Length: 116
Image 1 (cartoon, rainbow, N blue to C red):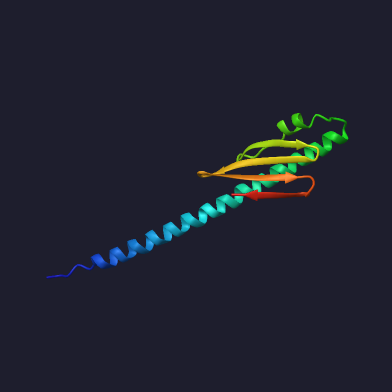
Image 2: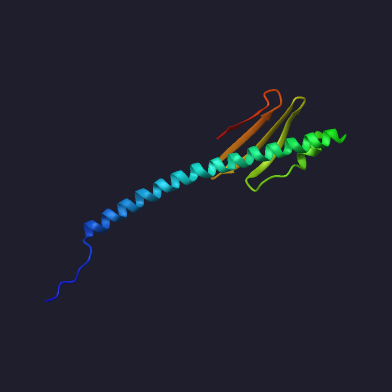
């Protein structure tokens, strides 16, 4: 009688456990990667909006709320809000899976801060 080769049940279970561990790790790292990507898009959108404000103000347009409303947004940015006009304070929000990410710019500080 010829013996047919194959995998034992234990070998198959070990492979399934290894694959499940690797898939859960990859999902975790993908979520972190996606959150960083959204944060980068929010910062970029805030900087583009600040450029639009600077160009419009130099051209004589002082209607900052209208400028902010027409600022370009990436697909990850849900909204860009004007919190204050003097000093200029902007806030951009986006969504990562079920969490909201927001980045804000303060003219006094001259920097952008983000939180998850």
